[in-house]
Length: 115
Image 1 (tube, rainbow, N blue to C red):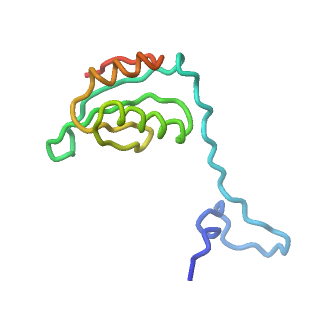
Image 2 (cartoon, rainbow, N blue to C red):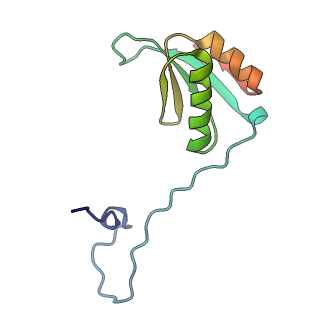
């Protein structure tokens, strides 16, 4: 039997005696995606808590998650490696900082190497 997610999303109301009361669900607002030339992305290398493996992080993207997923897919395809998009960051396997900066600048982004 499927659980009703309405109970999880209610806004702190436990019980109401009002017959006409409706629970209000939380509305997640996604920011509008900035144009490409206004995006300032940072590319860095990370090894912390990854069992010694190197991961290239692309951070600083301002926009909704669909556009971030699209950019992540494009970068993974052009680099020919795996990766993922989590918590507003693009994770690319291995050390691909120089290649990513070249790709991002070619696409019109402002990108700089950090760390």
